[in-house]
Amino acid sequence: MLRFAVAGCPHTTPPPGGTVEGLKRAKELGINAMEIEWVQNVPKNPERMEEIRSTAEKLDITLTVHAPYFVNLNSPDPVTLSASIQRIVAALSMGQLAGVRSVCVHPAFYLGMTPEIAYENVRRATEKILKLKAKFFPNVNLAYETMGKTAQFGTLKEVLKLSKEFDLYPTVDPAHMHARTNGKINTIKEWNEMFDLYEKYLGKKSLKNVHMHFSGIAYGPKGEKHHLPLLESDAKWKDFLAVLKKRKIEGVVVCESPLLEKDTIRMQETFGRL
Image 1 (cartoon, one colour):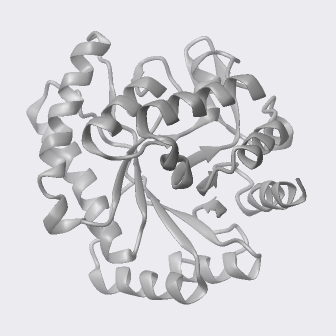
Image 2 (cartoon, helix red, strand yellow; image 1 turned 30 degrees about the horizontal axis):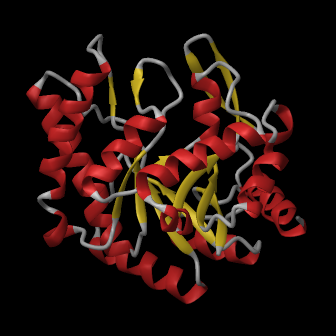
Image 3 (cartoon, one colour; image 1 turned 90 degrees about the vertical axis):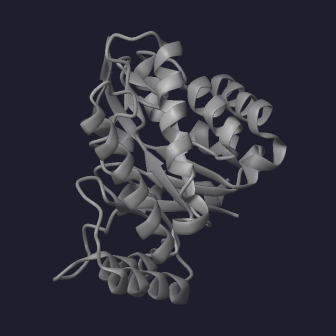
């Protein structure tokens, strides 16, 4: 089964808001997945996490998380590197308590280093993170995201190689890839090539449990600027949905449109009609 997730609480969530109320509102709208946005900080209340878990289970809503933005696993500064690792571990650990399937992470910036050196630095940091997996987050996937700016570590090959090495799966974001290549990765042929590469690295069964993002996106020579509503972008999103349908992709596609539930429902209903 493929589910379309809203990126955070729907705009129409009634006051006082919050994740639990957002889950209830999503269900009312017919949305069966949500990515919880811990992009500024990770909550620390285990009781609150249990409330999120029980609500999501009761409503049959699949959960993913977006970890804090303030991460650079390629930082030469040991304080920054340590803080980055701690933020990721916190997101994975709280995600475990909340019943989350996968945690999206922006892994690193190149900082003028070669991609090869950056990869080794990210790989070493990943080893440190995953040493804690059995104890703190045994059921949660660490999903490094394909990134939208050329200065960021996170090409498709980079995140697939890391994922294969550590038995993980990435967050594939075709909008980011579209922006990073200044307008490419926006056709049926290119998306099929993307999934072919995914399958080559992680195996055919891996496409039955994906963690993906999709939206419209504004971009320039250096890549991503900001996300856009589907209908205000050049994204050939209906073609993308057709590829998902034909290849029988399963898992979660998070709609990161600024319109949140409107474009999530738009994608979900269009996919259903294919």
